[in-house]
Every structure is written in structure tokens, then in C-alpha cells.
Image (tube, rainbow, N blue to C red; front, side):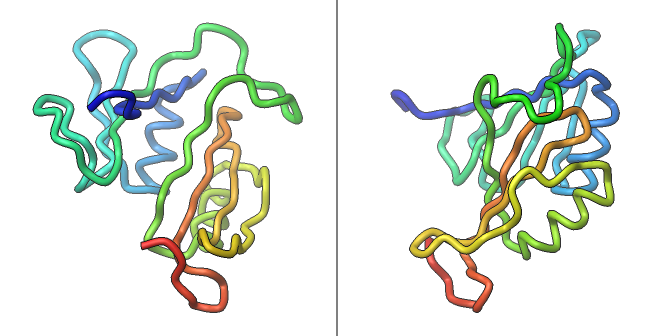
Length: 143
């Protein structure tokens, strides 16, 4: 397990707003961790187990209350961002994300040899990407 990314965290000014956003858009399941302002994120089947340490196809994460101001629109990235592998259409998910309160950061585009991906800013200004192995012409890249 050395040097593998095993967890991610999203910071939220209004945690419930982002719980609702990611639950609706990506189907993630959230559970509050005790009485603290922290929610565990279950990203779905194939994610690394939080207790057994058995590696899967992805990772789970957490959502925590932001301790400072949210990112300003147009500000440079300050920290890491995540890219979510999706089975469906990146374009459809980006449209749905915008309907749910996200903002387009980079439109979906084909990346030869990789797939089709794009980036959104969630309703709290956090950047995240979505990537599908299927290009707009139907060819499959990464498997």
C-alpha cells in the first residue's frame, strides 16, 4: 500500500449543500462521523475499504467544514483537486452538475489515448474533474 492515495477530502462552507450536490450528481453516500462536522464519503463499489485496506478501483473520502473563506471565482487552484472516473456521458453529467449549482471550469473535451473529460466548480467553489474512457466518437481509450 506504500505511496497510494487512499483518501480525499472536500472542504465545504455549507456541508449539507455539498452532501446534497455530490449525492445527486454522482450517487455518493455520506455518513456523519460521530458528532463532529465531518462526513465520510462512500464513492461506491470498488473503492478501497476504509477498514480492511484492500485496494479497489477507487478511493473513498471525507467532507469537512471549511475553516476559512471559500475560493474566489477565477482564483488560482490552491491545493489538490480530484478527477472522478464516470461510466456515463461526461457532457450529460456536466450539464446536470450545472443544473445542481456547479459552474463550468473547463468544458468537456476528447483527450486522445485517455478519454473525454471536463472540470466543474462545485457550489462551494471546489474544482473537480470527470473523466470517461469513451471519446465523443464512441471509441474507448483507457479500460
